[in-house]
Image (cartoon, rainbow, N blue to C red; front, side, top):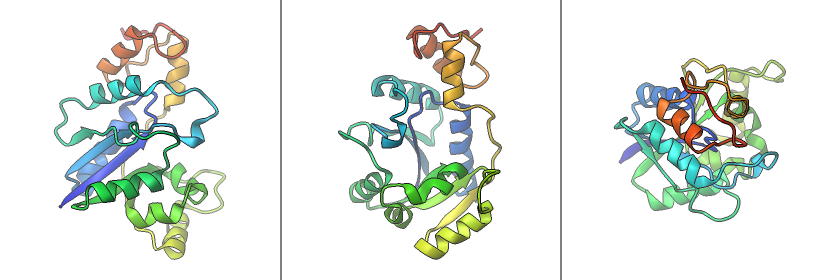
Length: 208
């Protein structure tokens, strides 16, 4: 039996914050592996175009190369249509009954999770490892939100104690579009891939 962390997202692009999060989950909770799982067609990302799956998985594989406890998974990218976390976790349990799954998320997702597709199934199928801090405008503190979800859904929720990177994938896409240097925020191989493939509206990305 393995303890497997699942770190999902569009990874458009993957950045150092994702890698720090995966590493902290691995170390803090004694995971056997962390699977980086690019999403296929996330229903909540319809407000902007998402880079084609092949390029996003290329970036993920470049970013995690050389880390023996990180692994790439195309489990979601291979599924047609919208991909929902509840369905993904159900299929993972069916495909890998020998594993115990830990779903790695940020605090923002913990506040939004009740609006997800069948949140009760998400919380029943995996332990949630949560990083970050409460929204300033949140009605509950992070501890209160965790207590609420445990009481309502019987969720298993554990904190991740790691620093936050002060830039998002959306910020990096905008920086790339403007030709700004993003090498402080992504692995060098990923910055080079973005530049060579002229990702993000065809902008030239400075990596020097």
